[in-house]
Image (cartoon, rainbow, N blue to C red):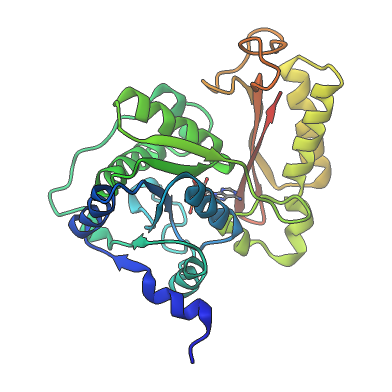
Length: 301
Ligand code: AMP
């Protein structure tokens, strides 16, 4: 007898052809079923699985895509060595209520005459946009394509990639895309490290230094609660922790507007739209430890 987890693999449809993937979603929709979509690059971990479970709360059927998108990597980035763990990914998804996995080959996404690119919204310009030129153009283009191939009613993204989620939400608004964007909080290891497919590059001895990011975010949140409202002072408190714990370099550590990601020209507002629950700012950090680029963020409210 096959173990239960593997048995259920059989019920996941793995589809690589865009036309067939779209037909699968349309068929579910025609039965009156809502479909939720979780786009990923694979190398799945508990963060991805939390998005999948959230998708299950939002819809009747769940679609996950696994595609390491070449066009969002720069020429000197880690596309070739990005972790690919297909068998384990499928095993993990088989333990969730996933109906279809869309896993195309690059040539199925980008034909020989491919050339249409999305110009990303303004929120894509600073921070990651500055350090990784072309990255968000690649992200917007592939996500728009994925939304066309998997015409789901809702798509779930992680707050872990805060700027990416903002970029996609603005693209969806700007282009009147018929899909709702849901953003799910960052899933962390017990010690606070945000889960990431790239964490597996981290040598065990450098994990302590990787914790600098979540510690710096704890510090900035504490300073904010203590009443500090100057972005510069809040940023300096994060940088102090990052340097003390010993990250190799800091790409940015900033406290910015949570919608536009623009720097503040005045002290942080007390509350946005008169609501205590709405974030007034977001702290964004990207730093390098042992050759691995780590991202984390925290909403201040
Ligand atoms: P990736 O496979 O890294 O492109 O990520 C696919 C999706 O999972 C994106 O929406 C990410 O923001 C999200 N994600 C990655 N890591 C986490 C995490 N630790 N917690 C929640 N969501 C995450």
